[in-house]
Amino acid sequence: MKSEWRTRYEAGVQAAEHAARLALRYYDREDLPVEWKSNLSPVTVADREAEIALREALLTRFPQDGFWGEEFGQQPGSSGYRWIIDPIDGTRNFVRGIPLWGTLVALEYRREPIAGVVVFPALGLVYRALRGDGAFRNERPIRVSAVKQLAEGMLFYSGASWFLASGCREAFVQMCLRSQRQRGFGDCYGFALIAQGSGEAMIDYGVHPWDVAAIVPIVEEAGGQFTDWSGQRTFLRPDVLASNGQVHAEILGILSQHCARDFDPQHFAESHRIT
Image 1 (spheres, rainbow, N blue to C red):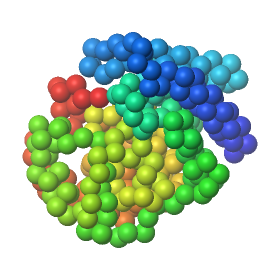
Image 2: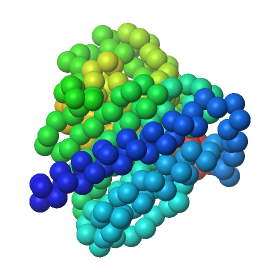
Image 3: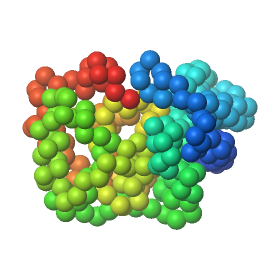
Image 4: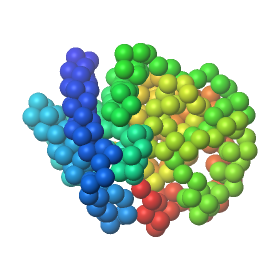
């Protein structure tokens, strides 16, 4: 079974790098048309071309595998394997010339995330992990930090506006007050920084499975922890927390104590159309 995992993992890395190069051709172009989806998120021809390239590369080689992409939806499979991809995570950055965007490829086996690849082509960086094999940035092994308290740590988040509009405003304030530094590194970049030990926690909200499925193996293989805000290990919720594992319980405690009792992350994400 491990050989099947590795074969697909290596194919996933190659496909992700190829799709990221395709997307990079459109990056920072003033003439790039931008469309807006019904959920108010942007999409470009680069998103669509990159996803088509990933679908063709992976399903041509593994035709029995399932596939789930942001732009063109799900295709069932019969092998027990499923690819979950986001051709461009951070499209808002992409269209505004900010290099913090990535191509994400995740591999599941029987609903368990076993491999993840995140390519940042504008930065020349590839983050990758296979279950049991460790996590890497390019060819360098990476590890989460050893900081044990939030008071000594750096907190990353994608944006403050939804905290201010939800029943978790005070939780956000408390996390900022209790952490040493805070930075608004959104999308996949903040999670990659946690995996390489450059920060202690990344909290995000309004995400979809394709936004974070590739992140889970990378963070966990680097020694970190990935859950929703209740502490459940899942990437199917809109509320996610990745950390070095040392400060995870402390942040979950802040969320539990300071979010309104009737706050429902799933309902809030749907009603506010956060993406």
